[in-house]
Amino acid sequence: MQEQKIQTNYGALGTLVTVFFFWGFIASGNGVFIPFCKNYFDLDQFQSQLVDFAFYGAYYLGALGLFVYSNWKGHDLVAGWGYKRSIVYGLLFSLLGAVAMILSVQWGSQESGFGFFLFSFFVLALGFSLQQTAANPFAIALGDPSTGAHRVNLGGGINSFGTAIGPIVVSLALFGALHYDDASLQHLSLARITVLYAGVGLLFLLAAALFAFSKRVPSGIRKESFETAPKAVWALVLITAGLVACFLPVFNSYRGESDPQTLHSLEMVRMAWLLGALVIVAAGLAIAYALSRKNPGGWGAMRYPQLPLGMFAIFVYVGVEVTIQSNMGELLKSADFGSMQTSAITPFISMFWGSLMIGRWTGAIPVFQPGPRIKKSLVILVPLVAFGIVLLVNELAGKDMSPLHAYIGCVAVLVLAFLLAGDKPALTLMLFSSLAFAAMCIGLMTTGMTAVYAFLSGGLFCSVMWPCIFSLSIAGLGKYESQGAAFLIMMILGGAIIPPIQGKLADLASVGIHQSYWVAVVCFAYLGVFAWTVRRILRRQGIDYDGQIGKAH
Image (cartoon, rainbow, N blue to C red; front, side):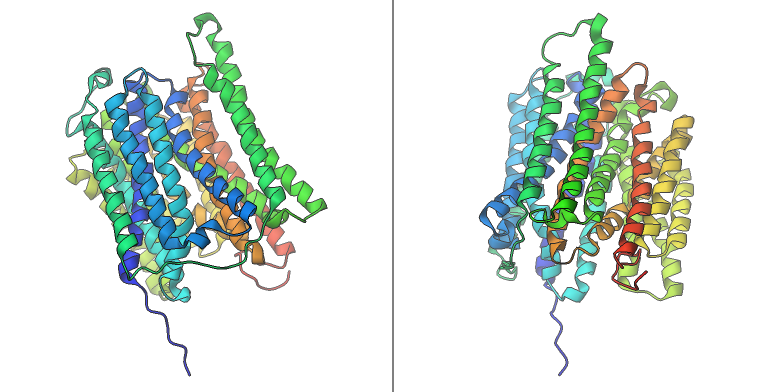
């Protein structure tokens, strides 16, 4: 008797993909919010990057808190709550963040308001951390497991659409249809932010209500055994303590007035502390792996070399993806890049996130298993359609996209890369990281629109790195696969650490915003090395370089 396939719960899935949209919409809007905050609150480049620090730091602390609690209790907290209730809790927590943002506008001032804003972003992203922990496995549970990847990819496509329109909506909320010069931004009313986050908060509340009261949405409660890893917990807690120890002196150095004569020395000290934070993450993961090799008991998934390497790769990937666009507003304001006003940079931020959408939509084609000829046609057609959508959405919002029409040449390079890489994660990651490395070098050696296109194309080449890194990092982990995935999610922390490092590098008079993009070069270099190294590691474990259990080598 043939086993009956489980029907997809499309009603629940339609509600679920809204949270994917929220993640992309809010995160990409930071690219417009950051340069605005820099001008409005009179910040340096490092301070403006604290928006990312608060946002992505919350992802890390939220995931770490869930993992520590689950280890303490010996069961998975999210699985015990159920995916449905976990997402409801996450949406309500994000609602608190939206309310906090509205209160920040009402109570804050140009002297104290930035701290309120950071707290609001932190609370909002804590809710996202819980939502993201539950949403991906919940998408798989809402239908036949064999088609689960289709539903996850649908969520990714909706997320990418959110990243493309987020900067546009935030820009309209801040500036309306007008172009403000940066000198007038300090006199701009923040009342529109109240309207924006009131709308966002309402959407969070409606989504939570749909989940909570819908009888069609299953609870998603799981009673699976939980593999504790107490030594890994301590390693992550110590890494966190080290990060706090590095960032506190930097934050404290901003209290009071700085002596102009000693400012350069102070900036170098700040830079040293920030680099120390990066070293702590890298060294902490390396030491944890070395200790687990001597005595694997209590380390869980960290005993496998591909995982610690992959954790740092996810850290670097998220960091470089975020830092390219977070610092782009300041880059475009420099004389070599057109001396643009903050209110005019939205099309470029939207195109960066739109580039991620272009690549992700193209990368999702194999999920639907088209024939070879149809697949090749789609690989050419889908990026062009996605590029057209990004242009159209911006033009409907009244943005001048003519400077970006020639960017289609970069999209053509992406198409060629997809045709060359096929569906092989290690080869795709090596090729795309090499192209991104080359693009960043071109951006550093040139100025004007050539450099802008080069930096924007980082979004194209970042687009499919996450699934490649993820699949290679958890390949062969067996019963520790779920735990390894949780460790990888924690490394979204990179979005909190790397952008402030580039921001402080840009503050150094001897470097500046343009040359600070060497940070991106180093990041893409590591990702290329990771792809080459993990491919060899997996082969030694009897796993082929596509991340599938295969022939012995």
